[in-house]
Image (cartoon, rainbow, N blue to C red; front, side, top):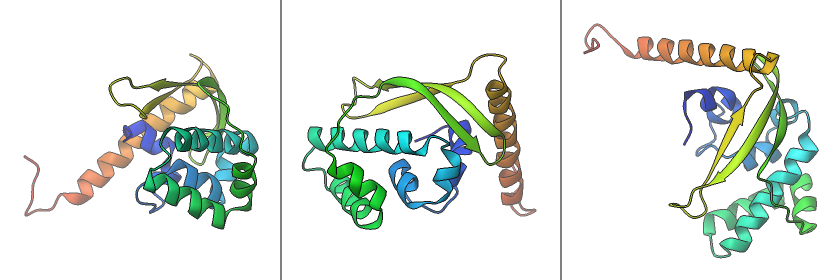
Length: 163
C-alpha cells in the first residue's frame, strides 16, 4: 500500500505492470532499477538482507519462498548475494535516487516496525528542508496530483458526470 506521492516516486514499479508491485523484483529484474538507484549495489545488499531476515522470521511463507526462487533463477546478482547468507538489520540511513521526472534526490529514511502487525514495516523518506531534494519532492507531488487529475478527467464521460 502506498500514498499518491509514493506511487509517483516509485512510478516504474507501480506503472510497470508488475502485479502486485514488488521492490525486490524491480531491484533485480528491471534494468531501470540501476538508473533509479545510483548506489545500486548497496541497495541490492539491503534488499537481500531484508528478505533473508524475513525468511528467518517466517520460514514457511510460500510467497516469500516463491519470490526468492524466482529471483535466484533469474538474477545472478541476487543469487550471489543470497548465497552469501549475510543478514544485517537496516533501520535508518540515507539513500540516493535518480527519479525519471525530477532527477537526483537524496533522502533520509527510517523503517518503523508496526507493533500491531508483526512483519509489517512502514518506511518513511524525508528530504532536508530547503534542499534540492525537498524541491524535487515538492515538484513530484505536484506532478503526481496533475497525473491523478488527468486520469480522473479521462474517466468522466457525458453519460457519467461527476457527482
